[in-house]
Length: 334
Image (cartoon, rainbow, N blue to C red; front, side):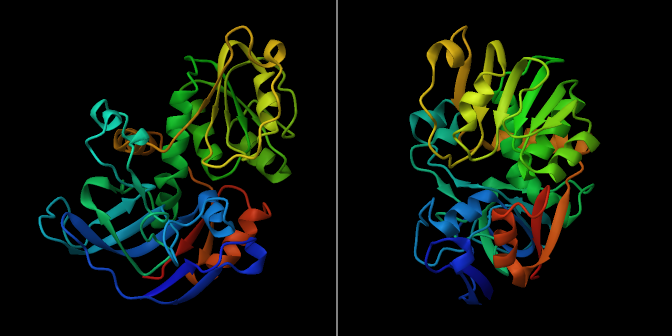
């Protein structure tokens, strides 16, 4: 099969990705083989290529927002049929036996694996996924629009719930890319007022088009104190900025897997009066199922920019330079 992989992690402009031929994967017990129809381009893929997240394995194939057609199955696999359209997301497997798995917090599993980091992902013609960690794709979404739901959407959903946003509350969103623009739609659908802070003027326009009450610069002060906020931008310097925009008792949820250093916080200005700072780590399968049901009900309108599969390196370069709004998706190669 043809695939892209991380050859030598480094700045994306130096070409850390390589394209070539790799052996076709074979599904193991409980796994299905997917012919890749589309794969979202996530900022985590960029972190992997540039070495902010070291690849777990030599020549790792990125990609964890994968829409594919089932073309094969391993021993004991019975959940899907040949020809079914399914999705593979960030979470590839959990141990099922640690204290976190037992209490329903499998996103905190002590021995998890992740697609496109621990196992080869969707920047390829074929990939395998365990059937218990795959999702049925609602028919309302095209392949292109379904792809970003499988990470950007799921993580945005978990971040929204983790923020503790009250019914009808005021939500601040810092950064407005693939995940944030989907989260804004969910919050607005559920009755919230959304305030967006982002450095991209195009993203500010998109936020307003989607129904945000306010859109300003990344460090802008929203016109009202916020009942909750989510930081999507991987910029630790925005943490104190966001905390100081919160009302008493409100929470800032940080939704990225990688974040630059957070400046020293001033307890009185940033955290006092029961303001809370928390991270968002991966997701549970329940998050994925709940989110996809909500996405279908709304239905969400992903803003996407498509790239031919052969231009995966260009898509990551454009992501690094904020050359598009919404989410990038690789189409094909299947």
